[in-house]
Length: 336
Image (cartoon, rainbow, N blue to C red):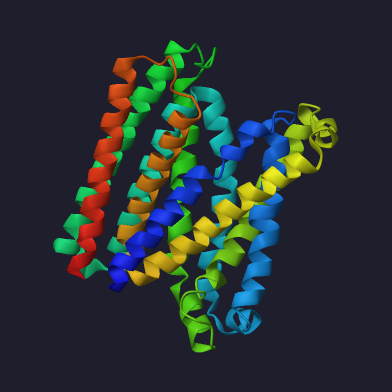
């Protein structure tokens, strides 16, 4: 099996894990959202990444000491901006609902996270066949996510779950900020490539070298998430609920953290296997797979029950377009 096919296979796994990581939240019923997200932040962003990085990148300290200031500044800045942008995800969902906000966020993230690295780091491919594959794939992702958003919005209206006082303008603004910030995950990987290269040259196996980038992303980005959760627990007086869930709820948060973090690790390995434009083509492919996995889990857990046949047809149409996007982006890997 060639490396590109292997990379696409790992992306399937990464997308499935990321699209599934929030599933345990359905069972943390004794906690408010901020309680679960607090423990998810602890495990996914502040505990697992340092432990795993120190195990897989023995010379991590030397990597950061040898890296240029420009590279470190880019990685740190993008990581901090990503962490702040994640706060706006919760605000966007609260303002305009999950379906619309999620579609805008994933669409912007897919577009910016692939096109910016293409233009900035691979200008020779902008108008070549590789670039055309990126544009075609991203366009299909945007269309597919948009169709899924229409279906999700219809479902929310059918089930009476639309926010009562939604401010569309503010909600869309929050979604744009969150979407642009989400794309920074891929920019950290592409612009932090010198760290990955240093880790390889210092003896780290190629598959684990991207962990040198994920460590600052998660730890720095985790701080705003932690602060926001603490703020909400104080504001909503939900801190007292932490004791109600007990070890069971904490265990579910651990599972969430494992799925999310190792989805990120798997994405880093997969993009490295897909060639010189792996991160460029891999990112929108990854976004598509996340949406598909999340949608399928929604069907399995009954979220689409009583949504109506027409709504379901629209939803499956969106999934079909995303599958087409996956095909375009995956086969695009044969060209480089």
